[in-house]
Length: 212
Image 1 (spheres, rainbow, N blue to C red):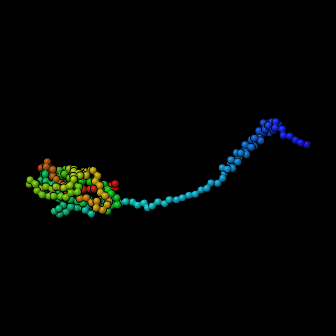
Image 2 (tube, rainbow, N blue to C red):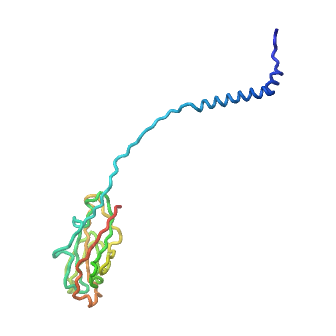
Image 3 (cartoon, one colour):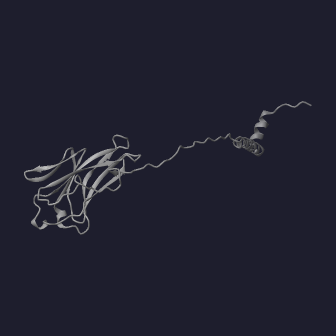
């Protein structure tokens, strides 16, 4: 018995209920096939990078090679029997040679608690890259400095005042890490009679350094 393919019945079968189920199964098979591809394992790898050393720097500002320096002797910052308008000059080395970092510094001057009113009539002036000269002019003892003025202020009894307010820089490189400062302390010309016979025991210059 021979059979012939009836295309019309085949199309009707696909469009009937059985055909809908068949198409749905075919569609599911396609989805499952795509899902199977998504579950395949992926290649993976890793690398590492290690840093170098971390080291802290050092800031160690000094004056005349020490942390605390006191003027002594005939070349120091001291004077007796001062008259209004008289002054005294002395030098000081500010050094950054023990630091590993460049620094900038400012300076303040203070007088002890309980200082007499004489302190309120003394002016301190600071010069950079300078050297001092002390002599007599018009009958008055006079101190002066070469170099560039970097700060000045009238002192205050029992208090601190800023003298060098613009930060000065010092490199950590040998040869450029030391600067000669020159100080002039003068009794102002308008000092009153009431400060006669008074003694100010000391003036403390404090340098504050920060890394740059």
